[in-house]
Length: 267
Ligand SMILES: [Zn+2]
Image (cartoon, rainbow, N blue to C red):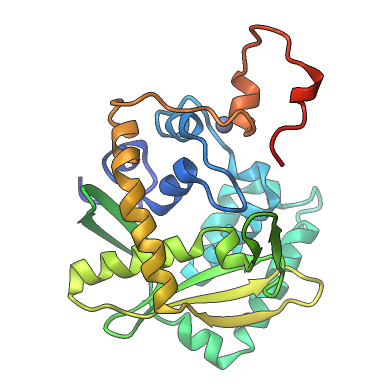
């Protein structure tokens, strides 16, 4: 199927194409473990997540919609953002402040001034992939806008040490896939940047260049994991349940008691 902004997130599009967000649902990131059964349930529509349930997602989408030029439509589609008196709720007033902060910075706006929400597809590692670029500067660079809790926030992990927010939320994977799909389409390997804006009391902004070595490393990981995801999507292998995500909690069926010593798993 030919992808458009109307059908990009449709079930049919998600069935035919693999996306970075699907990949992360299956494989997880350091910040959110993957769950194969949850990822498949989302794809086949038996598990539906409403964006309105997550203020973090809503604020991120609000800021995205502004830069995409579709904020009026977004407001009309999400009346939950407004108080009874018709004014925006505090978190979206805050989102407006974040947007204003970005717009006060000439370089930030220059990076965000590319072609908006550019859709591309490519065959890669045996799968058909789809991507949607926030700000695409043909022949120059790929820019993705990210809202985060704090740009310098560190995420501790007992096994691998400290991660920044890019590593925590799988943005190296996103950058790697976007760069490769653009390269397959245009023959040009472009640098990948994150235009970051924090949700702190005083919003912080940054333009972050992603090192090529880290993108290469992430792409190798994607290449390694893609065949298994395809087999799961095709129903050729049985999905594994993570038993920790909301989907697994909601669909859990008890078969026997567990020992109290099992309550603390491997930490
Ligand atoms: Zn799960």
